Length: 79
Image (cartoon, rainbow, N blue to C red; front, side, top):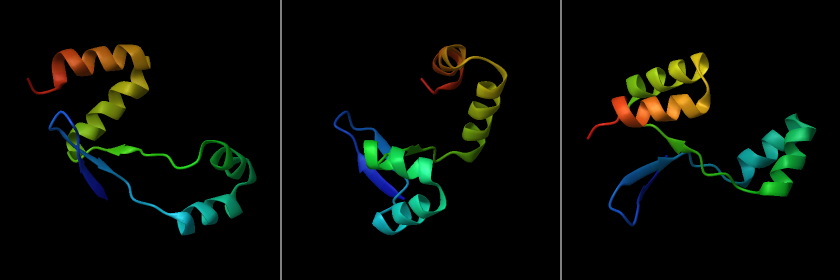
């Protein structure tokens, strides 16, 4: 994992991967290879709190993404 300190002082974590991992995925899935060639590297933010992550995804599976975001921001994020 890569840890980055953002300009606003928050810390974000991202999965670290390079050309070896990308080439492996491209060989396994031709359609994914086309997408990766088109958009390049993706930085996917990782949640450091596993329980929080599970709750977030359960909510997301049950309701729309917009409703999930609203609930998450209003009720579940620390203030």
